[in-house]
Length: 156
Image (cartoon, helix red, strand yellow):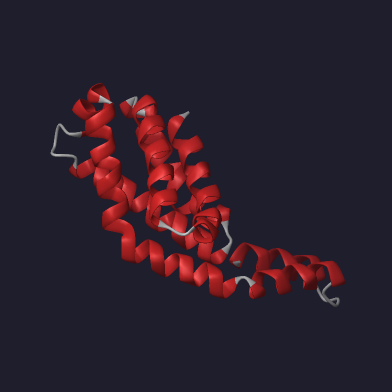
């Protein structure tokens, strides 16, 4: 939403905002309550969502489990929580640039240096499944595009 507002103001630049931009702002405002509800649900269910991902990793991917559990899973859990929180904030504000600028550019460099792309591919697929299972479909649908962006960036 911040990027959206900046873009609208830049395009207006001393003129009236175009009808098309006004409609875009109207849609953003109209969806605020559902995005806010989704944000609150993610915050409430974060521990459950992340615990399910760790369980799924342990149950279905022993090679990935060995990689993420070398420190008890603390780093993996911390990174997933960070990604989930930034995705929730980006979804709330409808601002994928915020997700990229504040987290993904930095985190992608670390994951490439650690050669964790294959592990991240599995982890973030599991995170998407867990979100789908723990959030109502209309809420999951708002959040999943942002997790997909993180998945793509951190698995390349």
